[in-house]
Amino acid sequence: AYVKPYLQEADITIGNLETTFAGSGQPYAGYPAFNSPDAYCEALKDAGFDFLVTSNNHSMDTREDGLLRTINVIKQQGLGYTGTYLSQKDHDCIRILDVKGVKLGILNYTYGTNGSYPSSDHKYMLNVIDSASISQDVKMAKQKGADIVLVFYHMGIENIQEPTTAQKDAVRFALDAGAGLVIGAHPHVIGPTKLEYSKANNDTAFVAYSLGNFLSNQYWRYTDAGVVLNLCVQKNFTKKKTSYKSASYLPTWVYRGDGKKKMHVLLPAQWATDSLKLPVFISNSHKAKMNEAFEDTKAILTKYNSLLQLKLVK
Picture 1 (cartoon, one colour):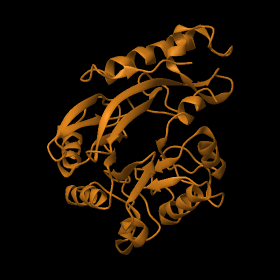
Picture 2: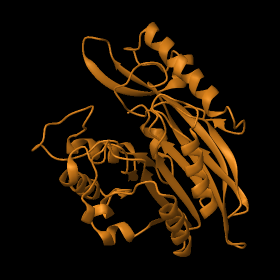
Picture 3: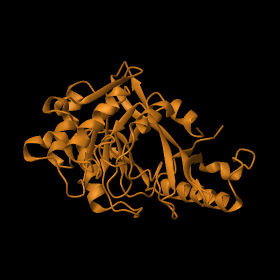
């Protein structure tokens, strides 16, 4: 409820879904093998999400049946998806969305799925990171009319902020093929953002290595912080060129209850500096943790990108 306005104000809101909707035939469960009630997907739609990327290390937590049912639940809510697929035809249909006249291509890949993969004749179900496939897909998206391509990776090392060589290499695969936007997930902590030069586009590309934890049950420093990243792209219809224009960010923090009852409430972290906005259940110790997350997020995100703007909260 507290971050809903910031999700709904964008032209399109994309989220990384790191759970499955396998139904009640399997136990609902958290770590290490996630299975969530269908109502969670309905809540995501209500909160303002339009599109979900589904290729991550938990895609196969409830095996192939769970992967397929997850997609069907997403479709029932009218949400878009990519990264996992129902069929070879579904896999080969690159997602290109028309967002106010800008054709946005969206691609999604994971480093792996905790050792559980689709069978050899069902490899189409899941996108894994492979330089040749990424290059081919980005180029195909542009051939099919995408003005700008967003590549969403699931990779990195958990609890490590600085990008690894593998992360940097994957970003370069995407940029060299012509991607203009690259966003990462998996480390569970926020990583830096950078403006990179794309030779393929002769233009500036935006890279975010990790957006941290949006909604999770992890509570130690850095893992209780996330960010709503706002990207603005601009299309010149005369020159037929679409470019990254600017970015801003809203730091978030997860409240996990008072110790007696576990609950998860997502809050704009900068509310820690404005007591009038804070809900009554936020104690001084919670406020201190929220402010810590706020300051950490600002420092990490802008470490290599001083142009990134903090979004003003309402």
